[in-house]
Length: 36
Image (cartoon, rainbow, N blue to C red):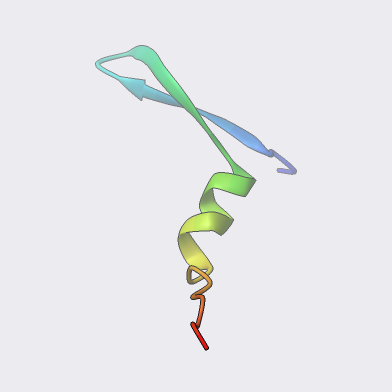
């Protein structure tokens, strides 16, 4: 539906917002730094 933000509900009340950026952060592996 083109939504970029979703309201998170718990027991029928809002408790937070999840954005597309939040989801992408979870799917993309963290970058590792390599020491020389």
